[in-house]
Image (cartoon, rainbow, N blue to C red; front, side, top):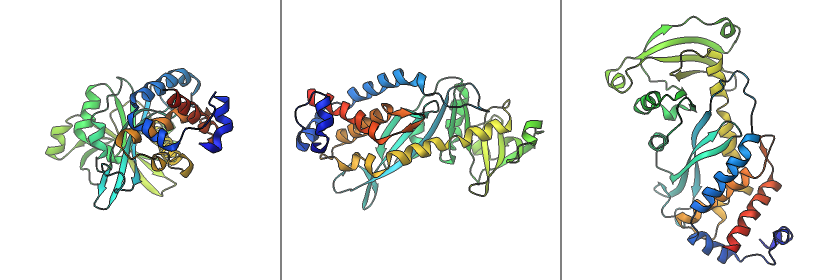
Length: 301
């Protein structure tokens, strides 16, 4: 804080707050205030954050995933993960347009991805893109009933009855598209959870040198569109890498270890990220500027 005195002067602050005072405010200040600040900024900036949608449907696209941040269990005794390790898990939904979070649920590290996913409601006619940790036929059936489309990578142990679809000319020209199937679940237990037909597109991933089976409940898109949707899922992986950079890991460097403080730290970071988008990338100087604006709010409240 003292090293940033020059920046704080521009905000009208005469001196830097003590670390103990900042920690006390973090412990007692409601994190919901900053959540509301984040979404106010989101509404302001989101129209400016459009990303190229080549080959993609003109619908709202959400990228769903989670990431684990390791913590010291002796300090964060509520962050249960393993016997001698602590961690939090950030269950995150990114809006594809701008790649900023619209939903974040912070739990201890043991909560499964699909358990958190059941608590998320997506708008009708939107698209959810997720990895194979979200293959849960109860949840997928709920999405389908609500009119939400999904593209989810399948697991290797799934059992299907397959019926091959004819590839469209554009898909035949796409070398990564291998096969396009209509599929029905063959195991009675699975069929009871999802009794409708699914579509599965097999694509070749050059980077990992393996075939990927992508499940969807949409039968009108081209296979290339389905493959492109899943490919764009890597935007959320890049987002997680960014928040895990040492200079951005505010959660590990705070003075207080209470749950509310950790909620606040995560919200501060999202506000900073949101205040700094430029060409879809976040610049550290702008992130710091966003943090200082938040710190000023804390000092005055």
